[in-house]
Image (tube, rainbow, N blue to C red):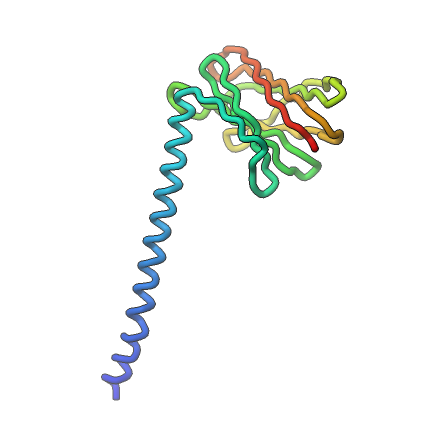
Length: 164
């Protein structure tokens, strides 16, 4: 009787462990694909490629075009914040592909009526810089970004977004 019970338990455990192993293989494959995607993105950054994401995004994130100035690439996106939209910027060194997270960044927003708002300091958060932006009119907005990053050089970046 004990042998029969042990055999029955083994019969149940073998398929379960095989399924778990299969799940681990899928997880490893997904991680490998993610790493390959990141590598491709870093190679693009090293080459100084400009990207216009055309508003594609997920979960309330709108990717804006990239801008490269004097060896620094700025990638921008808008995301839903507590009080509206947040403009988020990430800076990378084009040559090395390394992230630049030290320095000062400010943004001026030009609305569709060509009214330019006051410069507002962008706060650091998780290696990126962010500031709330008011996009209450339909039309094209321009984000004029001034920086003085870790290398001490001043750079200006420009992004735009069509609010439909």
